[in-house]
Length: 547
RNA sequence: GCCCCCGUAGCUCAGGGGAUAGAGCGUCGCCCUCCGGAGGCGAAAGCGCAGGUUCGAAUCCUGCCGGGGGCACCA
Image 1 (cartoon, protein in one colour):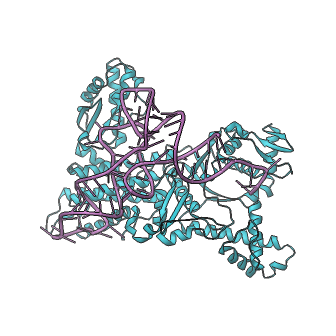
Image 2 (cartoon, rainbow, N blue to C red):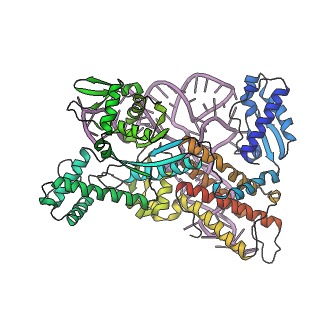
């Protein structure tokens, strides 16, 4: 019996009991569930349904709990039901009912953990979207890891996800980038406000290699722009791909200007009265969505402001059929939330079709000193740097496993000193150990069995219940847009497995005869390995056969 | 001044109202006669402060204190 099935049973029994007693069934909360108590004395699962329902139903919590316990006690698969504390109902499952979860995992295989509650949603997930003026730094790397994992998690729960990268290749930042390239090519110092990293000189060199006459070309800047920006794009794409993060759509802001989409979007907003004219500029009422001031869309010099591109871009996304647009932005962009929502509202959409996830910074420490991440200074810690230090798996995992709400401090000395310092190896080790076990089992002719009722050891029960949690963990991670929950769950699962492995012998000892218990335990191991692999897959982290 | 995020063990971080608050690393002490010791068992150690809501608050609300990040007709 899975937790979901048990919750269904509790709900059904509660409904029966209330009905039989002539009480209001609507007093039941909509999300009747079971949870795993921390204290094993409190059973395999517990439910607080009696406490949550009692007041509305007009009965004492413990009295209602008594009725529920009586009704639950005799049900198939329930070994015991008892009241505790203020009205908790603590449940124990029969070993065979609980063990059936193992069979479900084996049957579901790679699809265990997936669901379809997001099936109706077509989601545009935009993340990273770094300006093509320099290599991806640590902050971008965090979004690359988290965004990619979120995309996988959303897809696992049924959403149709398009991962998208928006290149801001139309504004003044690009002009400065180009000017920096030209200066480098001419051997001149970095211009005021330009970019001075070593990569600038490298790209300038490549431009000259591709177009030897670039410096004397009448359209010199245009040549450097065309080739230089393209080289930067390629570099960013290469780094992301090497990081295991690929996008479905690489969107160029410039295309919106070139195609007239920006003008069209602005015109439409003027027509519908969603822009107002003041002080020579056209303004969007972003204050309606909580902004502290309205924002100009057309500047008083007649040129479109940056936000004009955002408006056209939003319209483009909607035209492509997305019913939810998720933007992952850094903490320094939190002011954009109101603007982006206002954009949706201005086009007549529900602002909730725009969901902005704000992630905090990553700080890197080495020798106790914080490393600055300034691209301009050229001392940035890049995605490649981090990967070079710790590898893709550890980099992704360490960035994903924390909530994006918290500033993340990574210590390079710790991460690069010993691999064991990173929890990813704890999880991967569990998988590798299971893979090894499977090889050994095959060598002695042991095959998985189905006598799950024999799995009565406390650590077997704990492992089975942990495996049973996985689908709900993925569902919650998708719903809350928090892929770090998957990582933390995997650490719990790995711990449950290691404890089981320490306490329960799987393979026959010496010339011991193979028994149904051996076969059932092997099946449990196969299931555990499947869940570890599925979970690591959601994070884009490898599940190694050997380490 | 206004807005956003954070404050939980020595450190890095989990804990979407529930019973005795967890993990990794670090410290101390155990377990190698067989499946991978990159493991297991045990110990010390913590919810910034004050109110409020609730049967019940690390979790929700308010205020304060502390830290970080934002508040452009730049992109």
